[in-house]
Image 1 (cartoon, helix red, strand yellow):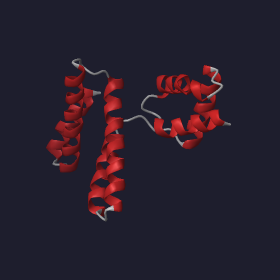
Image 2: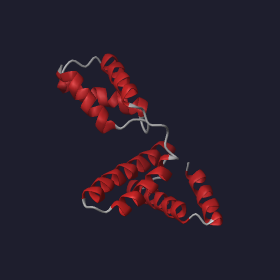
Image 3: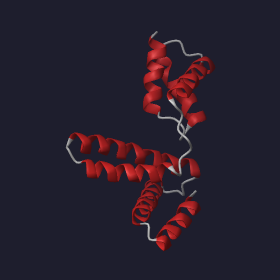
Length: 146
């Protein structure tokens, strides 16, 4: 994963794609920061987790910029999201998340809200990088409440 990002950065620099170069440099910086923090080289799954976090941060920024009347900054954040998501696996839609939650509930044998950690553990193990776990968490809470 890291080699692909570095290779794409070189190609973007040669092609003069300023936005792509800037975003790929941000990805490299975030990965390096995470490696320094963990004191170990990151594997592909950890790099995907870093990029997923970057997308989430940018979505939060878009909300703030939009509510603050700064559409040009929101557009810049969206452009970064588009580039970062090119490296992430396809995200699951709401129907797929609901099906995965039902499957995880059955697999974990969860009965009450106390078992939410078990269900989320199953989901994170199977769908890391493919699922918005904030949405999944809400779906699990709703399923366990009923």
